[in-house]
Length: 292
Image (cartoon, rainbow, N blue to C red):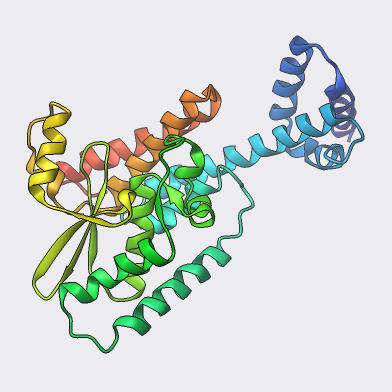
């Protein structure tokens, strides 16, 4: 009991120092409160309503940091699974922005989008044109497109923010198309070109390569080869093959790590590096024929 009382007193003292203007003091207080995260949780939640803007912001930052550490642990466990579902992985990744994120409204949105696609195509024969109705609906009517203003912003990577803003980077958008397409029974796959993930839709024994970042424009493989040539990259067949969910999840985690690093969020980027390390080991084991 004495030790518990001492810890509680220590936490109260540290919380009282949240309004100290000294960066040196704040650094030490943050480290200690992170170490004492569990016993400090209740007082930090109270501090979120403190009259002082500095206290409120620091308390919320500490709560967010604790939540993110929990999400990283969940991501490491997720990355170790035998089977990885991209949609589930992206919503887990989104919790780094909001650890208590309720994903149900976004799943309902996926269901509603798929229901509308189904309504439009259910009487059509299973042709490529039927599958392309998914692209026309999401790009032309819903307005999903690439964000060219701030390409590497985390909002273009978090799937829930991309749904809200109708903007994102290529992989995020392609994953949204695929999630809706899977619910609507439309065959699709992500194509892992360097720096620009594409969407392939299939139907009636044919396929089309779709640039979801550019409003759903169809591209020929010739155009994609020209794109690679412009980057001085030699052709690699694997870039034109359907990507599996695990590799796309790994790529999206790397995208977010890059975004964090560019914004000086070193601790957040370091946390994602540990997830990537697990995913890389998983990929290497799978490539060698070992059991994941």
